[in-house]
Each structure stands twice: as structure tokens, then as C-alpha cells.
Length: 105
Image 1 (cartoon, helix red, strand yellow):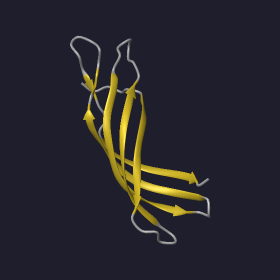
Image 2 (image 1 turned 90 degrees about the vertical axis):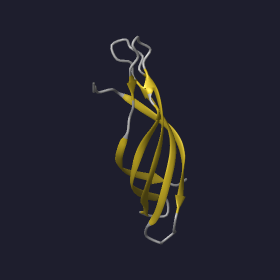
Image 3 (image 1 turned 120 degrees about the vertical axis):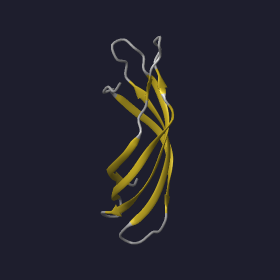
Image 4 (image 1 turned 180 degrees about the vertical axis):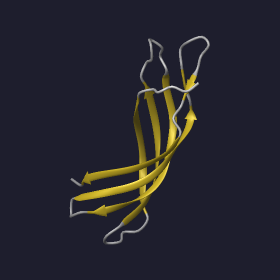
């Protein structure tokens, strides 16, 4: 059974920059993620634990602003379980393309 669920992510991780070329900064990244699913029809869905592994490039626009392009894969480590009988599980898995803009303080 498949269904659409709303959720938000909270995570923490690290990025390792491989080379500091003047125009492109390639990196690899790893993050631990908690995915909190919203309740559906008064059923508590729960929280998933996952790991996100990826790579990308960071391109400086000027001294303080940069743009990031990346791809990553979400690995589910522990599925979210509902509080119903019988229980069901929900999990997020798959590829993501990411685009970001950042400012260095």
C-alpha cells in the first residue's frame, strides 16, 4: 500500500571538500537524518532514522556567496512505525538532486 505523507527532516552531518580549485570546490557529504511524519487521520505515523550520502560541487559567486549543486541518496536505517494495531511502517528512500545558495559569515 502506498500513500502520500507529509514530513520534515532534521539532520546533522559533515562535508569533506576534496580540492580547493579557485572556481569549483568538489565535496562528499554524509548526514544522519530524522524524518518526522505528520499524523494521518488521527494515526501517529512516527519518526524514521536514515543516512544521506552524497557528493557535489560548490561554486563561489564572490567572497561570501556560493552556489552548491549536489546529488545524494537517502538510506533508511529504521522505518517509522505507527501506533495502530496492526502497525504499519513508513520510510523515505531514494535519490535527490539539490541546489543551494549560501552566505559565509
